[in-house]
Amino acid sequence: MDINNIRKEFPILDRKVYGKKLVYFDNAATSQRPLSVISKWNEMTTVSNANIHRAVHRLADEATEAYEEARNAVKNHIKAGSREEIVFTSGATASINLVAFSFGERFVKEGDEILVSEAEHHSNLVPWQLLCQRKGAVLKPVPVKDDGTLDLAALDQLCSEKTRLVAVAHVSNVLGIVNPVKEIVRICHSKGIPVLIDGAQGIVHCDVDVADLDCDFYVFSGHKAYAAPGTGVLYGKRKWLDEMPPYMGGGEMVGTVKFSGTTFAELPLKFEAGTQNMAGAATLKPALEFAEAVRKDDGMRKYEDEVKEYLWEKLVSFPGLRLFGNPADKSAKIPLFSFAIDGVHHEDLALLLDKMGIAVRSGQMCAEPLMDRFGVSGMLRISLAPYNTMEEAEYFMESLEKAAGMLR
Ligand SMILES: Cc1ncc(COP(=O)(O)O)c(C=O)c1O
Image (cartoon, rainbow, N blue to C red; front, side, top):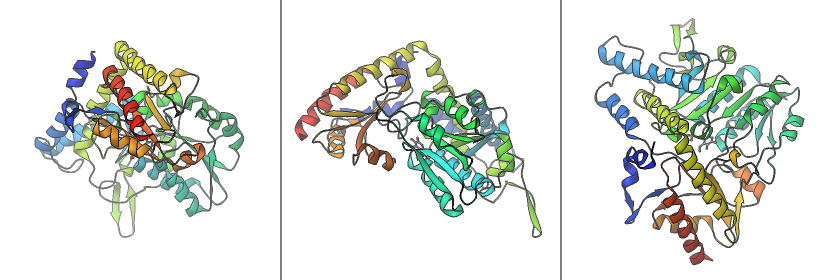
């Protein structure tokens, strides 16, 4: 694989912003989509558009087949034991809300505790807070250390006989740190506590093997991993999904419906009420194929690491810059850097960088408790994808110097 060939797969990368070449460094918010995804999306709309799982006509067959093929692709990609354990949703947020509601209904009661890390995205925090409010349970944060790594000793101490579930990100969307999720699962399981892993960032940058991790739930969004927006996955161990009540009621999630009572469809349809995002879901297959091909390519991984190391080195030596998430183990971080610069507001910086053609993220990054933890009102974040180049990284560093100089 070669970076120039990869870039050709992403037509948007050719566009200009304010007359400058686009440098897209906001991949953790949403990735761009390759031609294989765009053409599948297009095909599902222009050739095979029909509702799935319902009618017997040819178009419905094609649409259903593409949708279910995508489910197979997801199952194989994350090494789940069965297709029944793969539920399609509209994204990581929807998947977490599904578990918080449904697992919560069945297994959480007054006085119980749910643990999340202090570094969670609001999507892996607020649904648990809502559950705790509903049930009279307690949400407890697991602290992160100054270098951004999770305090595993504190996790171990916080796990108690009251803990019903631990929910933690595979990779933090602010710190870029890959959490030791296998170890977290081991600690929790040794005390009989199930674990949900928020893989919104992890699915993009890590090889995910849910069988090896032995996690109870793993969730992610399609749009951050090159697929269409409005797509998402909930992997759940069958033993939990079987026990959990439906989250939403509606078409196709039922067995029989009578006024005297309703029975529910088998997994995974029990959790897929109503018309699904069939065109979007079908793109998960080419999207994950692309993600896997890039990750399996030694040359591409090496190049990505070189760009990451270049940025890391330049940022830590940048005058007045505070980098959040700076672990000693270089391999425990994805190419994602959040930072603050003394005397410069992150949003002003982001606006100036935008004028230079560079798309970055600024603000709280949906992780307000983590901003409080580090005593800042917001940060600036750059997050890279395999189509980002060393030239872009160098241009970014030059532009950052220029922009910070103008604002200081
Ligand atoms: C770690 C993490 N979890 C959850 C989410 C929510 O994803 P979505 O908005 O696609 O549902 C995000 C999005 O940024 C994220 O980075």
